[in-house]
Image (cartoon, rainbow, N blue to C red):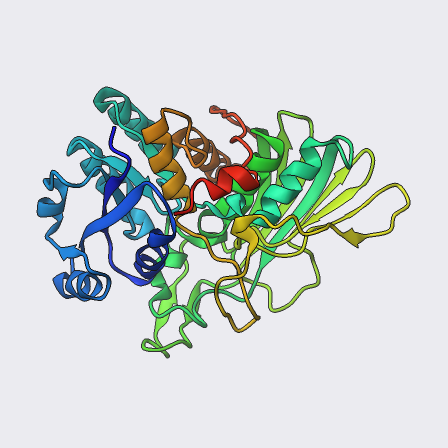
Length: 377
């Protein structure tokens, strides 16, 4: 196989800027073309980043393209990804992969028939901080993880996103939008989930947008915005996950894992970097030594200060996995298990009972310093 895969992008909205701008950091891929239902959006991105603007049918038929990145809205992920597979291209999708387990199984079937690969964001668990946490756990430094807590809570998306309506309909909500970061990292750190239970609710049936350009518009809320879930892992660990857009402020840490020999404090899985802290049986919480992982080095400015951003790492790892004939870390298997976990959480909230997983997966291979360096140009 070639040493570099031609990449196309469908969906030229906000997130596409990240893929266009960060892809040159990585080996194994080159963005050649893009498409969008809004032709002008595709042309603007193509001109800015030296790609070719095409219609969606033209992109699907482009023989130079090996893998297409699906950056459409969540409700369109399944249909677009299926069309990409049927056109004979590999797929890398933004999260969530699909909105139902049945859609995911259909993608698995088509991919198998076509002998194609499907990958899916998030790839933030490949970041230096989360891989340091993985290393610490794998080395037994806090013993066996028995329990933990995760919290991702805020007032909502309508205060900053330019077009937040889709976050509050089926396929949106904090579990399907933000849950993938937390669940992917938990799978990275602990492995697959056995069963879940949840309580779900919504504080308001409508929301008023305060961000521009739609400030003042009212949008309906059709999916739970407040979720408190319990996750039992195959390993025996039990984790509490709270995901809400009905919280103005709180003091909960993003992720804490409790082991038989100590505790581990993991930074926000929405980002690649951050400080990892741990304690032993002496209860003294100390930051872990920085291990100079290439995906933990700050490379962007943000209102909160310098930040590590290596999104597209998952796509690059998928490209190199195809070239090298190995398992991709952001694989269909793991993304589909994540969908099983998230949709089961919502189902449990509706039905008031524990839901057993019908899928499973393996932990992704750890991405150490040398492995990460091999993904960079």
